[in-house]
Amino acid sequence: MVYIPTTKSIVPTCVDCGLVGHYNKNYYKCSKYNPDTADSVGTSCKRNQSFEMKQEKKEAKQQKTNNTNVVCSNCKEVGHSSSRSPLCKNHLSSKLEVFNNNLGKAHHSFTRKIPFRSCIRNNESIIATTSSSVNPQSAATIKSRTISACEDVRQLIFRAQIFVSYYILMHKDDIIPDCIFKQNFWYSICQLVNNRKATNGTALPSD
Image (cartoon, helix red, strand yellow):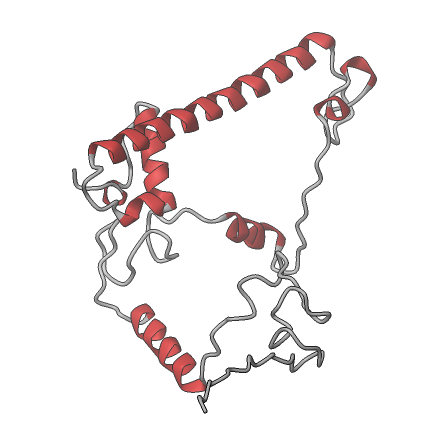
């Protein structure tokens, strides 16, 4: 007698719907399968931080903020690290700070978008909330200047992209510096492309 071993395949059973053929609701044919959406992607696997970890991060951030020996990269004075601090003499107030200083912290801001023709309608309409009418020549001048300003900004951004792309291609064998992915870098690049001196030289690579 010859013994021939046989194998029996194990058919999985879903722990969520109870049907066979899959293990859980992560299988796309499961009746309880929930596909990812734009709101759910990146949130289901978010790391849960413990209370101790949150406290360590809070203390580290507080120590960095309370460091009185730090030197500002803009005005070179001690007590703050950059011009973003209100302590810096070269500090430029943000839009939120300007609103809070003039309107108070209890204000609510919103944006209303209207077409250009609804804002300016020659002699029959008004500009914003003023009561003065607009003649056809003034309306055409405002429109042409608006189009020109938008075109200038578009050309500036386009040339800045070409300039940075050329820099990356010239350094294709090197590691791309992290500053390229920061806002201050692109602000300085736009200044150079616009034939102006970069006000923040630290935002640019050394080469």
